[in-house]
Length: 117
Length: 110
Picture 1 (cartoon, each protein chain N blue to C red):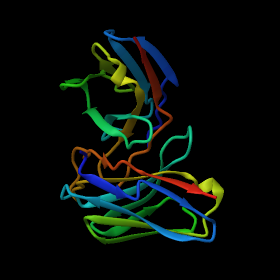
Picture 2 (cartoon, rainbow over the protein chains, first blue to last red):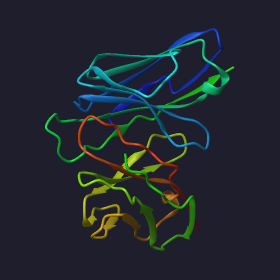
Picture 3 (cartoon, one colour):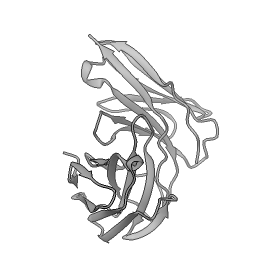
Picture 4 (tube, each protein chain N blue to C red):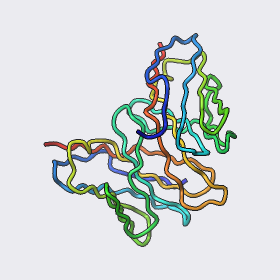
């Protein structure tokens, strides 16, 4: 049990659908991340939230819209996706400090396997 | 961010020691070295982290030479369940997320 849960675990959607992925961390962390992992490719960082504020957006298309209502929850809203968006979407969390220091471990959820038809 | 280079794949047998080396020639002074393990269709799992010399925990050891331009993850007596992709990451402090490379796919056979 990693302390990071993701729902749904599997999702099939058409290109005109709107859906949302949910992530919840039970670790008391203050930073949360969305990653995308396509088949046989490295993990790609999509978004980073520190202290509920988005601090990084790695040139992600606008059809992906993140939302972080509090430090424990992270959403990824999906609309008008393309088949090439089919991938494993992973959420992670960590405890970041403003003063710096040893990089904290990122804890990952089990992921949502998304298939866009 | 420091770029890392790892072998694409490795094969081993149960009970053997496996050493996976990662190169990170442009590692910065403040960077730490972290290794993650990922099973298919699961999120990566933290294995070990270090800055210099040697770090050991219940799962693995991490060897880092004095110049810190490379690191070696050592898995003692691997089993079939150690079959996974292993990622070497280099990152520093601050509000920056880590960058995952292609990783090393370890296949352990009976």
